[in-house]
Image (spheres, rainbow, N blue to C red):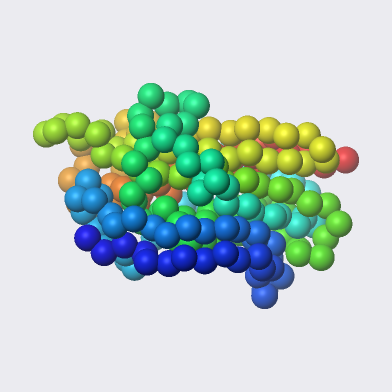
Length: 203
């Protein structure tokens, strides 16, 4: 399988003035047959499952990709191990999370602004999608982040499966492996960012 053969070290602010992203990336290993896809296909961003009104707060969000330094093989909320061989390992995974922040925070009433003095720091610690089982396969979306807001640190962890009521696909859906992997990873990112929005409190 083709992988994303990239080796980057980046410290940059997005030109459009939405999210400040400070990331360090490492080479991405080749993707295994578990995921069954090539990179570059369309990724779907799902709207929030809950309702949020954060009052038009102007906020600078700094996304730090800490996955390569942490090298986690398992997240704290799941017994499922991570292989870190999906397409979300490396730059593409951070790119998806960055765009998911933009997708969810805007409708929730946050004005993303890289010049804002209020800063929400988001550390991406883990992101993977696993297809577990033979015959009857269970899709797992795994995502873990930590945030720092006003000096307070929070940790958020999600293991969502295709049996979860918030999953965009059901456990009986007839989909390809690549679709199952992408959908469940997308759902995991959405779930963890909704937990972040739930805890955001503005004075």
